[in-house]
Length: 118
Image (cartoon, rainbow, N blue to C red):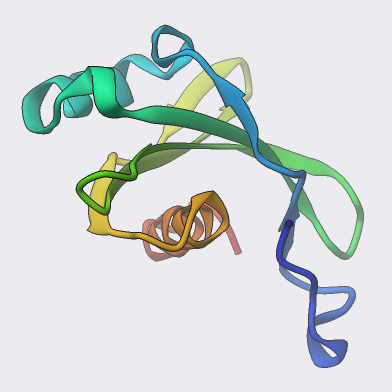
């Protein structure tokens, strides 16, 4: 289930659609390269969500997260199209055994740290 905003967060920040499983080959090329360098790619499950601004409801991009449930590892990246350019944050590896929503939150935090999301 997607993370629901707390009362004080309502109207600000970012929310996302429920995770949708996709094939690894559908991932952004930077994410695929990161996966090939650090995981048994056949063990990974890719989840994609649409990310939206809470205040305006405008789409801001998508989050892609590959989860390796057996090892408790995830790798993910945020991507967006800005002025016709495909922008993505650096894929990040992190420990995650709470499922895709927890991993998505970690990727969103990375995108915020890189200044791609408010």
